[in-house]
Image (tube, rainbow, N blue to C red; front, side, top):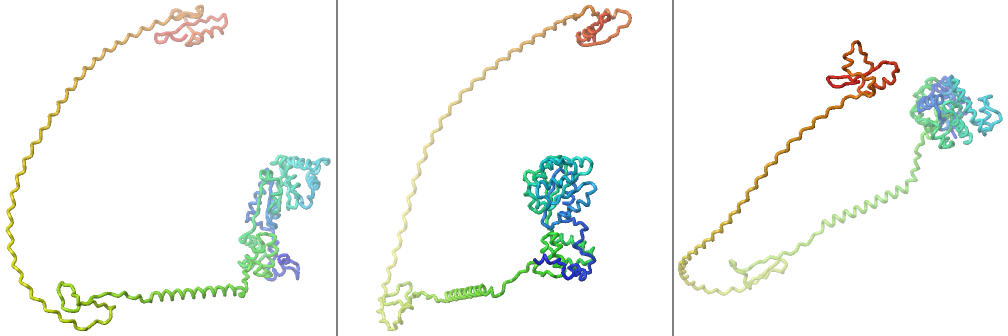
Length: 480
């Protein structure tokens, strides 16, 4: 709601405040020149210039409200009025086909009949408009805010254009908001309508649009287009020229808070975090308690003394005997048994002296070993039987002598060629006769075939004295 009240004329309006604060000579937002070429605006203008003059398709210019469609059409009319005849059809007056026909009659004047149906009159208008192009000035119909017109009227105009010679008939230019292309028949729109869509302005586009106007109005670019204000201009204008002109004065006069230009992050109050914070603290405390208990249990398990197993050991009391087993009076004591019994054992009886051992008898001498018997001689191996002699191979048979080749038969002697027999003996003269004549002989025609000369004789008159002969060449008959 604040955007609608930025340019209210209250307390002298906003421009006097801008002029007083920034020293502006004029309102930079009211300057129509220079034409803004970026964001595909110049591309759209050049496309309209070319296709209105030489194209054979209807034109559709779409964009968000305030995107500059009307400004582009105005620049098109200003720059091309010398070679094109522009007529704007007000969309608010097109309430039906009768209103459309009334506007077309104003353009054609007496070129349309008065007693025809509206559809027939639309078709005749476009055929009539062909004569204007033939005289050197093409007619262009501009329908701005076409989204307000009924789809039946739009398709009637397009049908009349398609029924005429599209390269000469009046060019159609429709301008409207996004989605206007859905009002046409899809088969006609896809084949015969050239669609030009204007994109929204970016932050850099807004800076490029306002910078030359601020400089021309006498303002400071660093103040009016600072990063903070440029961010506010882009956020509130939503990429539209129309909205930009409404919100810019309020932003420059600091009538719009920063929260409107860039949605600030409204942090919730701290009290809303108390329960999550408490749950987080309890979770951390429980984790610490469990961790400490686990560490203590691991430490206690490492300090437990494992009881050692008893080890048995033998203690012998009495005289030590080398390589003898302990007597029955000996006792085994272990660390696990009770106190050692220290009572004196009775003295052992004296052992009898050992008897002298008898001297060992001399060992008998070993008997001599018998001599080994001689081994029997091995029997001689039988001689191998002689192998049978191989049978003699049969001698090869002598090869038969080749038969003598037959002598070639002598070629038959060529038969003598038959002599020349003329077909028209009356006109034939032998070569010897001609040579014997005195005077001159004029050769008129020659040929390899006699029929060639005979054809010439047949064409000659009857009183012509013509004859022919058979010539010779290198001693053989030649041509006639």
